[in-house]
Image (tube, rainbow, N blue to C red; front, side, top):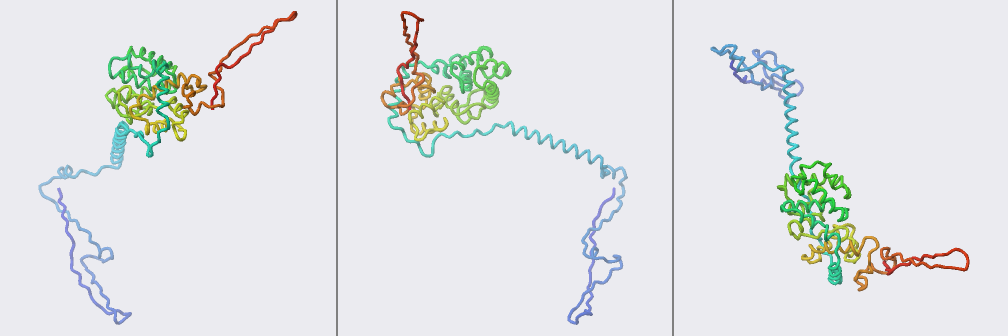
Length: 387
């Protein structure tokens, strides 16, 4: 084996002074040539390179030298090593990306209040009590087929909460009668109980066939499967207890989240505003400016309505909207708010379509000669005018 010894070439250089041939006051300095160093060049003069000297070390064979200092790799082997390293780097990058993509996203915060609270409308309590009184004598579809009823057919508490959430997801843009029938078919398709494990075990075709009557059933099939997987992986197969976590689930919005918390966990954290609550509160003039969507309606109502009524107003107004304050042709003749002058929308203008019923009168005309003539007259019954 050869040992490497580094020695620095050092030498003392003396400069020779001589007068400049161009100016007498200028002195030039010149370094004398070193014969041992060979011809001098600007690079060799100013070079600080380290000079290496190799000396043989006795007692070491060539084999030992080869083992200690292996021969350099060929270009082909270097390329192969680089390709292998690149493949390993790509694999590691993919694994890191997959690990990051699997991590749960931070749920987006749902606003709970307005910066400037909405003022309470005048006589709102009188209107609320009048609607409550009317609702006490009405059995609406939501009372017998709403999301509150979905949990009653389950025994396990987790399944009760999960059935409530599934019922709410199916109810979007779907009548309660259709939702209730779909829940019954889905329960039968899953073996008699709506559970997270049963939903994961079922294929998409089984779920789709059971809920095919609800609106947007294809999309809801995907949402239910994705939400069930999230519940299994991130929430121990149970329904979350916060609005933000519920709204992070596919196909679940604020209305469903607030109602799910009220029904499944008995938590009163906000108002569930659907199309009925949104429509009726605007008809009643409970907003200074008409709200454009249910979220605006919810924030307005939560800013002035007492909190103990937050969990009650949805069921009350939904049933009222299903039976009396209909989306098209409201039955103002049956509403005490109209007669008491508490509803600004029940004013003169259009005639209610639902209150117009056919009343046929037949008049027979007989003469001495000629055919018998019958005249039918249709007249409105209990005409009602709307603005």
